[in-house]
Length: 188
Image (cartoon, rainbow, N blue to C red; front, top):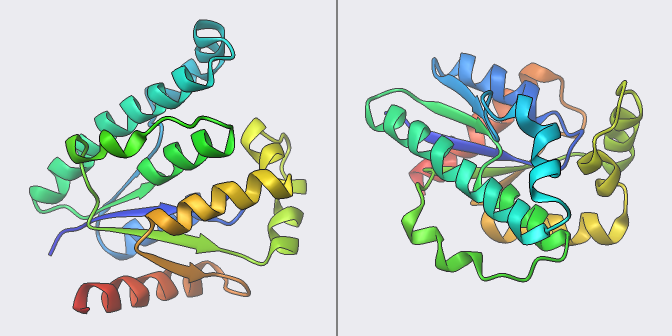
C-alpha cells in the first residue's frame, strides 16, 4: 500500500539521508521541502519578503501546499512518497521565530500525510554534525539556541504522529527503526 510519509527533525539529525534511503528501501520516491524549484530562489526570497516573519511563514506554507499536493497525488496513484519536512516544520519554524498566527485554521485545506515521523538524535552528536558542515544555514544556527530549539521541538512533537530516536544508528539501522515504527503505527 502506497503511503505519504513525512520525516521531520532539527537540522543535523540525518533527515535528508534517511529520506533518500527510506524511499529507496520502500521502492518509493523522495521529495523535499521547499522542493527543487524553490531552492535556487532562497536568496531572493529574503530580498522580496524582507524581515516580515509572517510573510516567510505563509510563503513556506504555500510551498508545503504545492509540494504536498504532488506527494498526495503520487501516493494516491500508488507510489510511496517520503518527504523531507512538510507542514509541521513550516509551522514550527514560524512559531520558534515568534509568529503567533493561527495556522491551524488553514490545515483542513492542505494535503495531509499518512504519517509524520519526528526523528531525534543525541544533542551532542547533532551539534557535532552541524559543526562538521562547510557552511551553517540560518536554521542550523538558530537550532543551537536552547529557547529556539525548545519551541521548535515542542511544536514538532505536537504535530508528528510518532517519534524515532536514531542515536547510535548507522544509515541502515536508522531506516530499519523508521520502517518498524511506521509499520507499528499503521497497525495501530
